[in-house]
Amino acid sequence: MSDPPQHTNDASHREDFVEKDKKPAPHYEHKDLPPVAQNDPKMQKLAREITYADHIEPVNRQHNPLAQKLKSRHLQMIAIGGSIGAGLFVGSGGALRSGGPASVLLGFMIVGGMLLCTMQALGELTVLYPVNGAFYTYICRFVDPSWGFAVGWDYALGWLTVLPSNLRLLQ
Image (cartoon, rainbow, N blue to C red; front, side):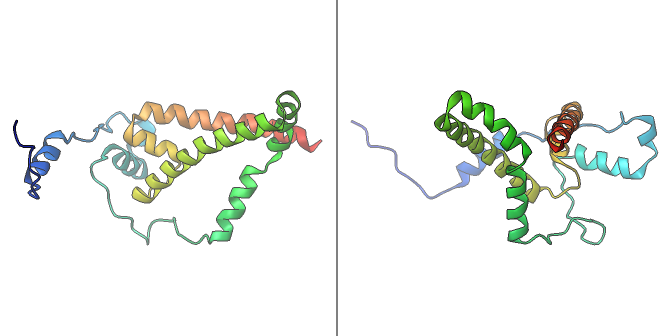
């Protein structure tokens, strides 16, 4: 019977293992910008920020309009206003009638858990990469610019379909 392997505190083998498994960040050339954007320095800078995921420039507070001025109560009011909207009252009535209160509560808990995970991930990305733009900026940077384009239009169309619904509730 052989002796079990002994643990050593030497971490050099771990560093070799980590270095071997590192993969380069995706790299996209920004030569394929639309002709209108090729001469625009702001668009070229944005394309460089999105393109080079392995290089993160520090945030320049003088030229960056982002500022951390929201207090805790502001964030709480935004969250309450976003969760208790007109859709909550309109959409819950049919679900409550067909499924009952237990199914509505269970549905809210499941979807709320998924949204909590999504918002935590988006918050971590925002802290790590504080760039101007919405979540589609991160999709352009880490997935593909065409996916970011599609998600941006999906987001815009989603809000354009919510607008008539809210206008209907005002009548």
